[in-house]
Each structure stands twice: as structure tokens, then as C-alpha cells.
Image (cartoon, rainbow, N blue to C red):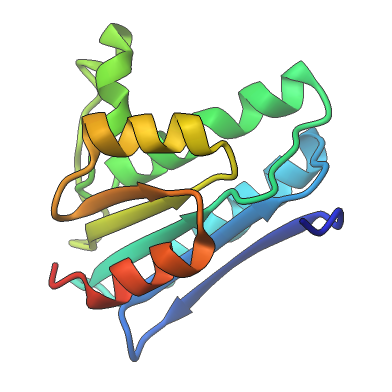
Length: 151
């Protein structure tokens, strides 16, 4: 794994995939930068569009408890504003009432999540994986799955 901090989000209009990456030894400032990029990318999508999302946390190594806490809610809260409820929210009863809405008619139709913790990711995929949401510890497998996902 690369030890450089990576914070990037990009929209590929040809595939309909938003790829967002947060990896390396991140601190709170890195997470804020990544979150702003994710939010800006989604806000720039055309009205009434659909997207699939590739959430790449492979190699993520928060450098403090604060950094860890600061990134954990970003994906569930952000995607809930685009018609998507992340499967692993079932772990948290306090998330039962999280509103799922749309922003400017834009909707997420599929999601793939990648992280290097194989045990956790395999368990998430077993418990929360569906035909439109999966969890992988291999970035290439995740990308292949999402590219082929018909959602």
C-alpha cells in the first residue's frame, strides 16, 4: 500500500460512476478536503441524473480518533441526500430515522465500498451486500463489479 495521502473525487459522465478516494495516513484536515471534493462533485452533477459510486478507502489509516470519527459519517450522510441508504447503517439503531431524500433529482443507483480490512469487508458484504451494493477488499474486483452492475 502507498503511504501517500490521497483525497480525490471524480465523475465519469461516460460510465455514470463517481469515484471517491480517501487513503493513506489522513488527519482531520485531509478528511475535510476529501468531503468538500465529494460534495462539490455531486453538486455539479446534472439535474435529475443517476450515478453509481465507488467509495475507495483502501489504504485508509486515520492518524487520530478525531480523524477516524470525521470520515465515518460522510458517506452515509452524503448519499442519504441522493436517494441512497448505505447498508451498514443497519448496525446503528440511531440511524433508523435518517431521512433519505434527493438533491435536485439526482440519485445514487449502486455503491461499492473498498477497504483493506478483509475480515470486516467480507462480513459487511455477507450481511449487507446486495445486487446494487457490495463490499470488497480488492479495488480491482470492486471496480469490475461496479462497471458491470446494471443499476
